[in-house]
Amino acid sequence: MRICSIGECMIEFSNTEGDVFKFGYAGDTANSAIYLSRLGAKSSFISSVGSDEFSKRMLTFLKNEKVQTHNIYKSKNKTIGLYVIKNNNNGERNFFYWRSNSAAKTLFENISIKILHDQISKYDAIYFSGITLSIYNQKSISKFYKILKLLKKDGLQIFFDFNVRLNNWESKKIAQQTILKFSRISDIIFVTKDDFSNLDFKNYKNIIKKNFKDKITILRSGYGDVEVYNKSSYEKYKFNLNKKVKDTTGCGDAFNACFIFNYFTNKKIKKCLELAHRLGKKVANFKGAIIDKKHFNPRFYANWHYKINWTSKKNTNYW
Image 1 (cartoon, rainbow, N blue to C red):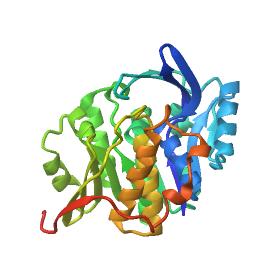
Image 2: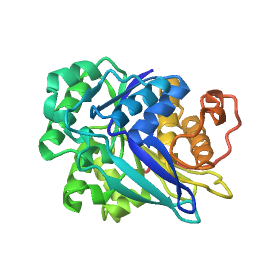
Image 3: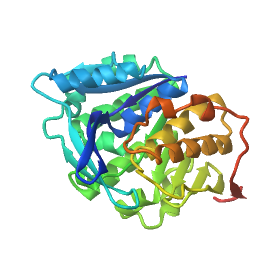
Image 4: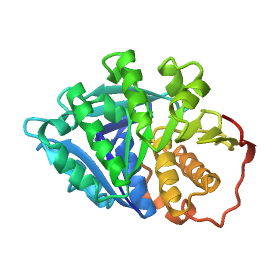
């Protein structure tokens, strides 16, 4: 499969122990692009970077992961963003961002709709997130939406992860309106109960029924529960969680990447979920969003011969 992910790759400082932090590069859709590449997809990342040394190193990092970088543009007088992750004793995270001069925010300001459409239309799918949308101004968001409409007509699959970080948005109202608008044009939606809560969408089932009836919606909780709203049907799965979690950073990104890859290989959602959950659990055993390659065996996350370990409740008359 050929897929492009769009968003921002940043300098990451992740808390290892005490006041010691590990340096790396990460960002939600960039993380997914890397895991897609490791699984065997032709994975491309679309963004904008500066001409500084750290931007150059980030490009090298992505190339070493066999992520295509020819759709990453350079922006003069800009740099890449930076964020710090501070973990609590349960592996949950607090994020601190520095991205005021981030080149990624300017992607749509210097590139025409035609150029971006022509480049992305060569792929089978596009993947983006709420964080992707949150870094752009309204003019750029409008431009991106027009591109997605064209890609939809071209037959590309559109995958969208809510991934709500309200502190990145101008207001909660803008976040609500924008995320719902882009959800409606997407084919498969990834969302968590925390995302719905952050947006003050209290009755999430009504939100899904009203806005995503013709979509596949993958709803995760933090307790191993996954609900799948597949157009006219509903299923709920319960997965086993790690007894001890080191860091949940990147777990959702890895989950999404693994689901997308296996969905293109075989559209049996149950198996896609099991393999995606397996990779998410693996990532939670390590610090940082991208685990070392020596701990990653792609066959273990893209193989249909493993026993499925879930329970399922199905209601085909959900709507």
